[in-house]
Image: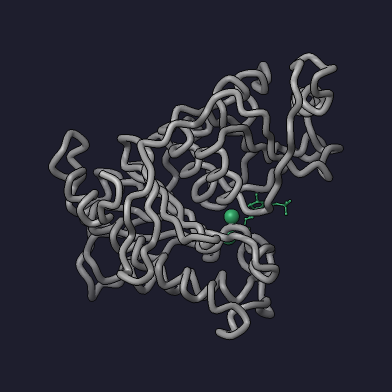
Length: 331
Ligand code: AHG
Ligand code: MN
Ligand code: MN
């Protein structure tokens, strides 16, 4: 299987037990192609005049980076005309983007975070693109897609994945039968299978959390981190190390390959959270579960949460299933 092209991998998924629908295969190939273009723009950096911010904010009140907008446009343009989608939603758009009437429509809904880790763009650290795929509800046939059609529990996802624009350009995806990694062969322009099915290594002594937000953590999170910081002399009886990249794609990828946990918990003082449920937490939780891990908001399984808004934020704790079980608060 190693070295197999993404195109062949998807055809085999279509013919095999996963019975991948042709529409979904086309969607993933299209997203993967767009990610090649985004990765190319990212790699040009200052020479391509793609670094820096724009003088505007997105719907979440965050200042948009030039690449946030460039990547959003590339994903919209690539996915509009293929006939595989009913509508799209993105971190960078206030509401959904319906497929224009001049194009045929499909049954899939695509959600994405065009650039995850935007704060890292200008300092040459890894950023990525996260995507999630849902089916439009059966009763949506023959009517306009509405924002409510996107408000489905993450367990309804039919595919999810991310690209990382790092030392190597990578694409990691699942269509519900394991997690697979593809590396871009730049000379040939083809994504080629380099790992999978990926299983999260157990017992890795690493955790990822923004320590500067300690005052916002629940007692359970404080205890979890303190126990690990105590190392050999604490209840875990072994040394741990901490990693935090500021790009969830990079942190989640490290966990898939090397193990450990990632936490961006709810702020117990305000009830607020940082990460978005529908296009960040859901796709990453789908991949983590497909690789044998667990993902919760503190008490609930992320994939069971029915969203109430497109840009809803959620506490997120994911990774090694045994470690996440230790973190679970009694609701
Ligand atoms: P985005 O760039 O799409 O807004 O997401 C950034 C997220 C996530 O990638 C990362 O884990 C987290 O924000 C970093 O937050 P801090 O800046 O608090 O470290
Ligand atoms: Mn993000
Ligand atoms: Mn983003």
